[in-house]
Image 1 (cartoon, one colour):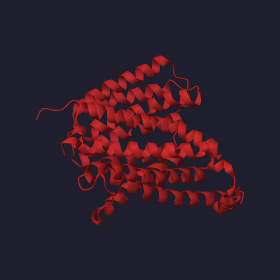
Image 2 (image 1 turned 60 degrees about the vertical axis):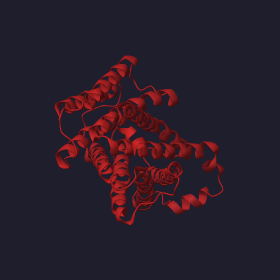
Image 3 (image 1 turned 180 degrees about the horizontal axis):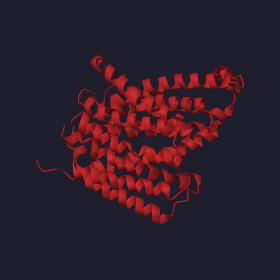
Image 4 (image 1 turned 90 degrees about the vertical axis):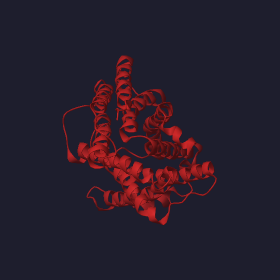
Length: 332
């Protein structure tokens, strides 16, 4: 118990949350590389969702393996906790990423990043007002506002922002944000009954399976039943791909393993941090994810995002100050 209580200490919280956000930020360029390797186009929603589903199924097995090695036994949920695993699978994996991929296909990455940053506010409001897990203080509100301003700066100083809004675009991105915020609150609650590694592993496997099935349905609809469809079913695609080496090259396997590892490690560690800390103290670090995403995209993809070094540093400073403000504990 003493060893686990270390996750409640501020230095461990900062280091653990930074690792999670850096991993998630690195996932953005990794996903783009994966699309390039597997030949998934930007308008192929079905293929993108299938890709995500397979990634999360593998992430579930990796989280199970890592957790079982750490704790010296095979982890599995108690029968009474299967409902909790299902709830997390629907919120954290299925709904979050289904709405995210649909929304991203109908809006820009810039606007998606800004709207996704709202999950910190939603998580704080849900935890404080609906579930009474913590107090809604002025320090927390101001810290979240500063962090959000940092995200605005990192995005508005680049390209791809306008005020056009649609339900399928910005609306779906916001629903993805709500699903993620609720999942953070439920992870904290459910970790009282089940270990975060167990919750992460099995919700990933179940959520990934559901996503894969949904992706197949989207693919079939787009290619088989739309007026401009090409008549290619998922089965025919896999048959034509049978024996082709490009699906199993070293790079193809490595990128999937990296993406699965990012999810397995980051979400499991995030769950541990949520278990021993207030939701707001952990969630506020999420403002760092888009900053890491911009930096890693520039480094690994050589993308010209339009942001200057000064704007990135200013955004990072605001997010850091906001994060520190949220960590301030109230006097009882």
